[in-house]
Amino acid sequence: MPSPSLEVQIAKARQAISSDGYPMSVGELTNLYRDRELIIRPEFQRFFRWSTVQKSRLVESILLGIPLPSIFVAQTESGIWEVVDGLQRLSTIFELQGLLRDADGDLQPQLVLNATKYLPSLEGMQWQNDDPATSLTEAQRLDVKRSKIDIKIIKRESSPQTKFDLFQRLNSYGSQLNSQELRSSLLVAVSPVMFARLERLASYESFRSSVQLSEKQIEERYDLELVTRFIVLFDWPESRMTLSALRDLSQVLDDRMVQLASDYPANFDHLESVFKKTFDLIAAQGGEDLFRRWDKQRGQFRGPFLNTSFELIALGVGYNIAHGNEINSDLVGAVKYLWSEMMQSGYSTGRSTESRLVEFLPLGRELTRDV
Image 1 (spheres, rainbow, N blue to C red):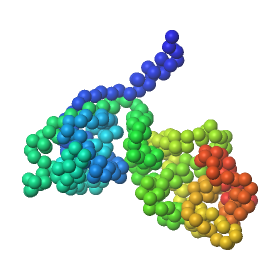
Image 2 (image 1 turned 90 degrees about the vertical axis):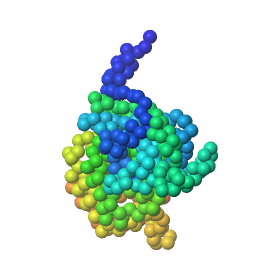
Image 3 (image 1 turned 120 degrees about the vertical axis):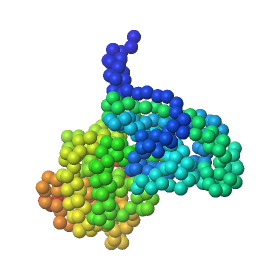
Image 4 (image 1 turned 60 degrees about the horizontal axis):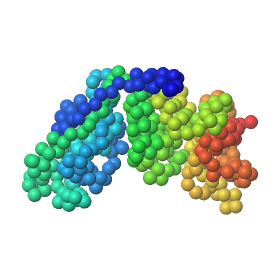
């Protein structure tokens, strides 16, 4: 016999989301996009990073009549559809026709296709141009326009949190997005204004000069990941300094940031102020060296940025600033002591992030406070 409590939970969760679904032609979807009734948030354009080969394979599938996965959209209060899952597919279809707009609203050039496994003659082809030899025929264009895609609609009656959870879940299935890109997508959906302020913090000069990241790390938005970690963790309560509370850190960051976005602008000015004061102080007291390893034998800071040092120093300074404590006036000396003495006494960096945080958050607060 089914558990009554489980049945109640299932019924309640089903009520939280109202959905609909039906097939639509590419032509219909194109018209909705052209009329701004189907939108891809400009902030999501950075996540459109399929290669031309991947895009060409999608066009190949459409021309061959291969069914495409469902597209998920969320209906706004005004009735407009926002793409929840299917960004790559829809963007490719609109780019193919020369209708895709970038984050500034400017039209992008028509997609120039590559040869594919079953359609090698797609090489160099476009939707339509002045050269018939490199243009799809009218019949081929009509085949694309008449192709059907199943659309799943999360109706506006659904709870906002359910929409965010759905987006996260859908994009976790074989997605190319990393955890921060998924989180950014969630935040843009909840509060584009707060997300824009987070972006500005990631570009804050004192932060950028102190946290020297590689081009690849910046491209993957690790700078925004660090801003997120700071905001969520610098004032993490001691009562929740446990493995169970910090288990699945990515989910902890997601939940807290979505809550902040939902409550925006409440408390954000304070968080921003602590962030800026922290990195202004760090930039003035050693900058990037505070986040590198001290080599006692060579008498110099060496190597790349270390997340371990960030957890200890940046989060520790942030906590003490927020609580009005005097900051250690010799942070460079504190970091030297950390690496030459403490890290040699059993503080291993080869552990999970969660286990490190349980130990390092209190340690960082102690190291960076003037006693």
